[in-house]
Image (cartoon, rainbow, N blue to C red):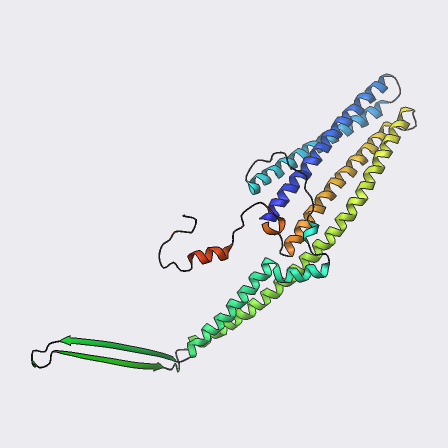
Length: 325
């Protein structure tokens, strides 16, 4: 649930940033179209340049509508997961500081703390006990019964005022043959035990794969942020240069539009890389089994099942819960 909440939050931040980026792009393309029309009137460009500017603006508006659709979808998911309408969202940050410092330590922690692994280990313990329970059907059973009886007075003898009698009986039952059901139950329990062992191995391998994948994706996202940041800087410089060259007639309108589109793509790639950087850090923390309110330091009261168990373990009757429900 915490991972779903983080995903909904960061996705909404990403789509909001991409929406603002496309809005700004449409505004810039609209200004470029206005300037192209004025230059066409002055005879500095041709109708081909005007058509190219109009085409770019139409493509920008199409991208804006797509970004609006993605934003609304992310907003709906946010309301579904979080439960309230999004207000002014704060900037999200990675949680690398809470993860193990090395891949080896991450794999060790995940093998011991991942919920899927701990559940599989608990199911294996249950299966071991089920085998012992099934085997108990072949063991002898000893039962001990006792009774005490006291009577007052006797109509046949006035000298007997009361009598006290008691019996104690022990019974030993040794199963010899009961149709083979006990043997079948034992074999079934052992097969189930083997299945639970395979499930534990599968859970550990799956966790190992998720941790390794998240670790690699996190490293790639960090490198991608550096690369896209440099790409944005270069695209901004290139756009400024192309615009200046276009003013003196050394560049065409298409060159300016291409440079503008390259800058928009670079900024969108940077936003996506920042999103991936944050989400992979949360995915890694979840894979090692440390994505909890206590680890994140959330200002909430965590539910402790041990406390709840201690509150109801000695209740012999009643259906109420400790919180009064």
